[in-house]
Length: 336
Image 1: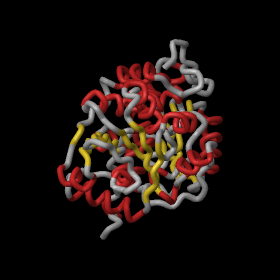
Image 2: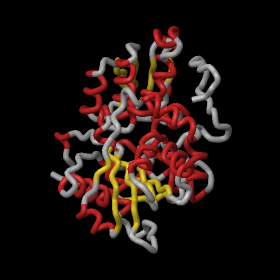
Image 3: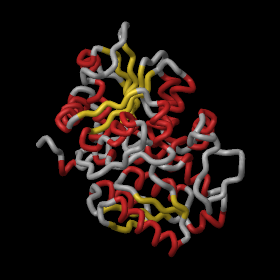
Image 4: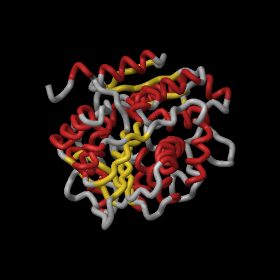
């Protein structure tokens, strides 16, 4: 991201001063991932438009490699590690419940470097199987942030692997911002862009890209009421860590980080929360009416658009919705 030589032995640093990424960083990331990532389609559904009272443009990241936007950031970060042969030989390590785990595993496979993924025992079996299928070594841990971090620290000491954090990394944020960069290029005059928020990598990259290229466009984060640290943090004006999150949107369980919180604080216009029934209804709507196979984290964004609290406009609104992924455990469909 920076013009300075990448040093994988130290914590990744921002090239943009106070914030983790700039528009230039996201544009460089777009060039980096262009040969590997899919340019995902933008799709519409007339029935959902009628329900929302607006034109909805779905950026379909469930069609991205590994079925999630996470591949964008992971490939961007791993490509930086690959510039140092010694670091590449030691490989990369992360902790993740699923989508970032798969993304990092595939990116490491592409660059022919070893990957270690620490996964909580509560992780989806579908996502765990995919990580193993991409060739990564999976190490189990208890389903707490403390257990994840302690296990990663021990394994890093043993292996010398380079940490690629799931979201709290400027290279990750820049990579995730490429989804909004494409959406803004493909759809003109958006009144708002909404994306789900967990750790904040996607919404941070989205906010930087959007406010740089289309300042009038609102940036809105969608969050489950049972995992609402971003909402509470915005209300308080300070970062409030996540505690005991409870939601079917398993990709949104993590807290904002030191790189993502300042961007959410300063560039995200609204954080809207939705309940579990609204998430279920939105996911079923996406499956049945739009024919878009998405996971609950994706449906959280549509659920927020359908809430009465969603901003209204004096003209027919044009809303971009980033569907973050589509990795669903089909043996555990929650509306059966």
